Amino acid sequence: MNFARAAHEHAVTPTAMSKTVKALEAQLGIRLFNRTTRSVALTEAGAQLLATLAPALAQIRQSIEEVGESSARPHGALRINTSYVAYAALIEPHLNGFLKRYPEIGLDVVIDNALNDIVSGGFDAGIRLGHAVQRDMIALPIGPLQRLVVVGSPKYLARHGAPKTPKDLLAHNCVRQRIGDRGRFLDWAFVAGAKPIRIDVQGRLTVNEMRCALTAARQSNGLAYVFKQFAEAELASGKLVTVLDRHCPPGESFHLYYPNRAQMPGKLRAFIEFVRALNWEVPA
Image 1 (cartoon, rainbow, N blue to C red):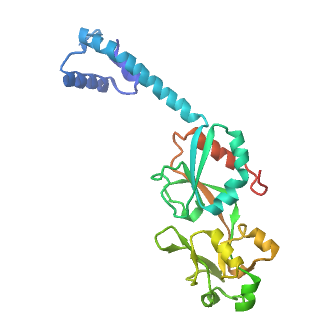
Image 2: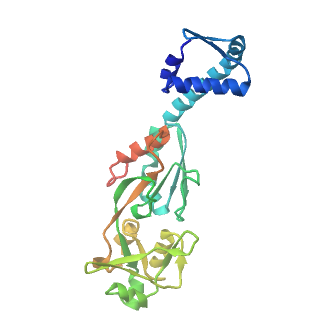
Image 3: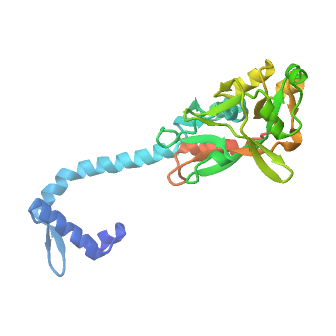
């Protein structure tokens, strides 16, 4: 038995190892080792304690190894927190491919517009626009750029006229979108010349989902501020048209974000690798 060798295996100094053993002996009130300048050997009490603890220590070591191996394997429930728009654009078209590739992973998707803390909520990752991701998160841009535009139905615009400048929106019935339950609304952001501006729009209808705002605009209940890709079908059919195009801000990416790269579970690593490899222009 050699304290120096044991200290090396545990990456501590021999002095630290010796102090730890002495502290344990003091706590137990028994001598565990007989020490001389030439050797160290277990006492009878030390040998008895080792014989009693050895099976338990072996079981702990085995359990730790099994947990490590299990964590590295792509399996288990992967919990993702996301908005509906991000889900519809980035997850739903590729669900089949992901579930087929990783049959041991169960995907638990929670649609949530409240920008909740994914750590306290027990989520593995979240998907949000880049500006909404907390700075202490690891964030990976995914998917094509998403551009916010103002849309209205031809019927509404024929009745009320089309706004020519962002400030003209103050005279229109706009469908506002609430973010979460704390009184915050989606900003209607624009560019006037080279200057960014925000318009505090007003309207009779407030919703907490972009798909509701889109439906309201299609039904001529007001103008809505939505992602252009999300309204693609309505724009292609002519049920909605865009206004103020030259004033709308440039596109922004959604980001997949998660707390830490260290000791990443296999299920999350598999999901990250999957979305990185996607051709976002053509759903798999």
